[in-house]
Image 1 (cartoon, rainbow, N blue to C red):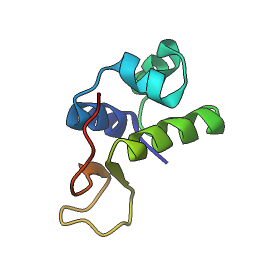
Image 2 (image 1 turned 90 degrees about the vertical axis):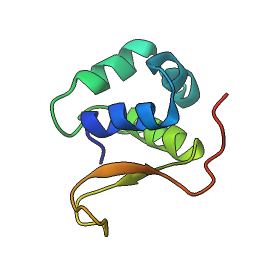
Image 3 (image 1 turned 90 degrees about the horizontal axis):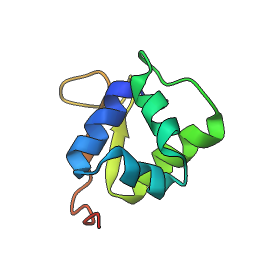
Length: 87
């Protein structure tokens, strides 16, 4: 679904900290910290993972999964065209 590296990269692209992501996803800060400390694909509560992915998408981010068309191949993240500003 999403890797810890993708999650950290997503926050960097959006220019947000862990607290902001936790607030947007309606999760606790320690939950986000545990997710980012994971090795590889984040494992955990499906509801929490869904909330994080939805929050990132709502902020204008697109997750690139394995097997999805991408110039470089592999997993990644990118901003959608005309991403809304995070406040």
